Length: 233
Ligand code: ADP
Ligand code: ADP
Image (cartoon, rainbow, N blue to C red; front, side, top):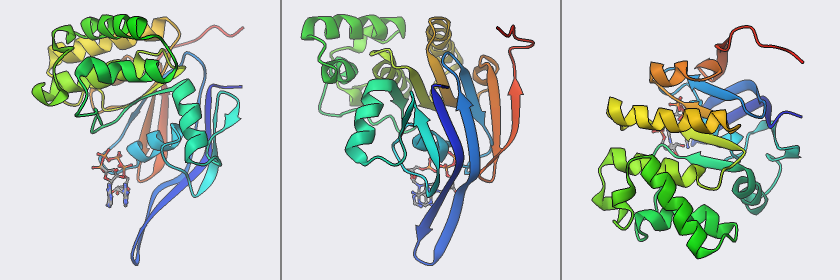
């Protein structure tokens, strides 16, 4: 079984008389350890697809399977449980908890998994330092720049070592030096076996992936393997 499998996804947004097919028949398979970059023009359905893959939203039709379990037909709490166990998510609008400190935000997934306070703190600080924002651990998210907040959101998404990281424009607010720090972290996590699916407009980020998927008008129009000829067992 692949880690993540989406088949024939259709997602239509309805507003009054207006109907908009954000996804029309999208299928995508992500093997364990795969790194997939999704690109395409604004409005083509990238965020919608990422949300469906992570069980944040449900399709009108089609299926999403995560770690051998069907995700799309579960209710909110069932999807939240699977998400907590298998997925790290970086939202385009970050969604940091404003009333908690930076490190409090990063500790959350560990605390939800029952990891002890001391270990949760140590692991969170380690990843914040790896991303160059360790000094901001005790600050409130609002005291940080957009780029720093983006790195905190990434730290929160990977601190519990999820099977798959789903990230919506994880370098969107970063200067090129900070983007390189983020890319280095992604490369190390990938080398350690972490699956990654990210949405990006950044060519350097896309080029680091194993596979680049291009979307247009709610469909996948191109899929490119960047790993070259792979050994098959
Ligand atoms: P992308 O991430 O590629 O920019 P999105 O998945 O965010 O694309 O959006 C795809 C299309 O669906 C866009 O036309 C967008 O305006 C529309 N859309 C996204 N979310 C909603 C929503 N909640 N309600 C109505 N339309 C939406
Ligand atoms: P992205 O750049 O990731 O596509 P958007 O700005 O399209 O982000 O969407 C941000 C939020 O607004 C999302 O929750 C999306 O579902 C919602 N949204 C996007 N387009 C529309 C729309 N036309 N009508 C209602 N909600 C929308």
